[in-house]
Image (cartoon, rainbow, N blue to C red; front, side, top):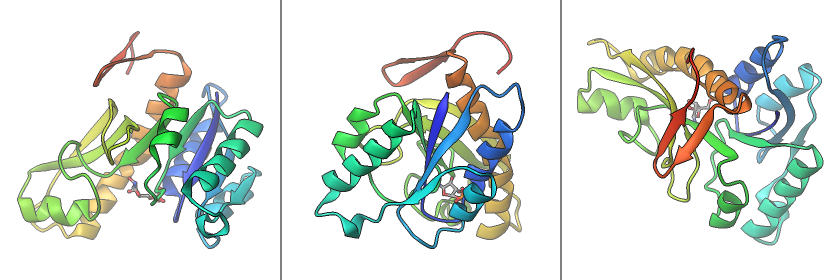
Length: 203
Ligand code: GRF
């Protein structure tokens, strides 16, 4: 399965997918990286791995639909079958979400449906939850909504700061995202309404 990864920044989840794909057994490869920001450090990670990486800046397009059409054209040209949002900090339009229906996934740093949106780690601490984590889900039009593929939980420590908690969650993100991609690439994932069913053993 050929992956298109959309980024805006650091790209550590992109790196996790690149690293996973180095394994001969991994049924997917990163075919194209698109950033909406020219200075996203993740672009260097792609280039270092010999993966095509392009910058498509929304400002260079008349409107959101034409920017997303350009992204779709590039993804199609690269033979992408699954689009992975990895720290892509723009909301996608209903058109793009429909165009890639059930072929578009996102990783979010909370146990959804808790804490959609930004600053999830600070909000988890402020709320006093004992467990926090990450979620990989299919993308729907509403931000941070959609059928859940994989979640991983971590405990919240009494002395956690947003940074220490984020670091603990990030370790799990880097496991969860390749796992979710693997399940899809192996054809083991079915979407039924809000729910994902995973066939076969060995999740
Ligand atoms: C991650 O925490 C991801 O869950 C969120 O944005 C962050 C991106 O980090 N959507 P990176 O760019 O993958 O390092």
